[in-house]
Amino acid sequence: MKKNRHLCSLTTIDSNGLPRLAPNVKWYRKLARNVWKLFLVNSNHFMCKRLFRNKSSILAEKRRHANSPYFLVIHPLSLLYSILEVMFFVMWMYAFVCESMLMMDFHNIHLGFELVHYNIVIPSRVILVALLFNAGYIDNKSKEIVIQPRIIICRYLKTYFFFDFLTTYWLFLIVKLMIRNKILVGSQIFIFRCEEGSEIVCLSACCVRIYTMLNFMENTLSNLGLGKITRFVLLCLVKTFLYIHIFACLVFFVPYLIYANKFPPESWLSHAKTEQFTSFFQLYFECFLVASSYFFGVSERHAITLFSEQICMVLISFVGRLYTLFLLADVLNMLGIAGVSESKYERQMSVLHQYMAAKNLPEGLRRRMLKYFEFKHQGRFFKENEIIDSLSETLRTELFLFAANKLIRKVDVFRKLPTSTLGAIIAMMKSEIYSPGDVIVKCGAELNDLFFISSGTVAVVNKRGVELCHLEDGEDFATSSFIMQRQLYAVTAVETTEVFFMDKNEFLKFLEPHPEVKAEFYRSYQEKLAKLKVLENTATADSIDLMSELQKGHILEKLTRRPRVKAN
Image (cartoon, rainbow, N blue to C red; front, side):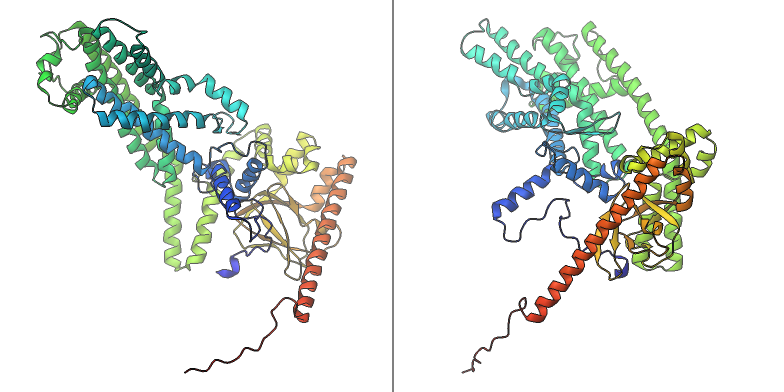
């Protein structure tokens, strides 16, 4: 299937949409370029398929970021941001789980743990907090990508910065410093309580970031290519564990803070004989079992008689029932109504695979058919015509205008037309999807249609087969039909491309009531044809110069006669 593969001869940019470096560039320039690529959009990021429909849109976003004054801001779809998400999840999970477990035996913490904690964990957490000031984000409402530093900093300061800063243990370190300098004085028990209280505050700040951790975990699993059901199961397991872990710490720390490790005989900690446990892990495991039993309402592991402990167990039982109901609703929502379009899509994909296997189609054709199906339906399967026919005329016009938003933004003529005229033009257009390598317009063909690119990239080629340029979202082609009947240039799809087209005479009828717009349209397509002619002349001159240099022998090395070496 090599004939369907587009071999681009335009080499002014690399695969990342950046200007190519010279072959003899210094090593540190290459290193700086590779580091810079970590800040830019990663085309393999799972969100790229949701936010951008084709490669040209991804490259346009890369160029927008690279050419902006904020080119060193970490893009939310970059590889570096994905690494930050993994590091954030690991660091906050460590603080949330491991450090709280060790707090149960606060005064017997191993020296090796303290060295790792203060020399590695805390500095890493400080670096992460600092990097979040330079990390862009995706607005949840508008789905716009924000990379302006001022907006990023203000948003972070207003939301999570204070809680993230608490997790760096600055409060605990201040208390330790005050104790060491004898600013904070009192009894030994009071000093211990201050140390414990400051660390509990730092650990409590991690609870604010639970859903951020789960969101980062889901993003990481999606980038690894795991399926929707697998991600859902793993997220539910982690979420359930975190909630039970919070209550396991609660059932221990509430009596501990009240009775200062001298539990009365009525306490469940006395019934469990926790003073006989040899490690903090045994104590944590016992607390985890008690919290689990009340969270799920399975059984009562110990008799709860103290009022403070009863309040804790009532709270755990109440939250556990609510969580179970919400979890069940999520399961039904995923497998039920929300999964109808996905299940139809999967059934259609299965039918397509069976059809291709029955027809014994070649591998290359199978890949093209699969890409076409994926591009057209975008993971959903529904009857679009039935939905559109059920809408009112006003809603239908608004829908057409929204679908052609890129055309309207990039084509000057459309921006100057009234909404009613523009909606009528879009409604008259037909659409077609082309796979990479498909010839959309042949050179010399007789056409009466005008084409607009909805999404994708096409290559313009002259009659000698020389590639002149690429056209992307919102641009038009086949405008030479306004001057002559036959097309001057061929147009080939570089990637999966959706094209809108309509009869040129029908298009001109819509422009008749607007003579200024019509005159500007004629002027614009004449300018485009003139640019293509300049590109064609330049490409022809370059090829002639190359042939003459080859004929003169200035490019290839001249043959030299070397002495023949005889074997001994």
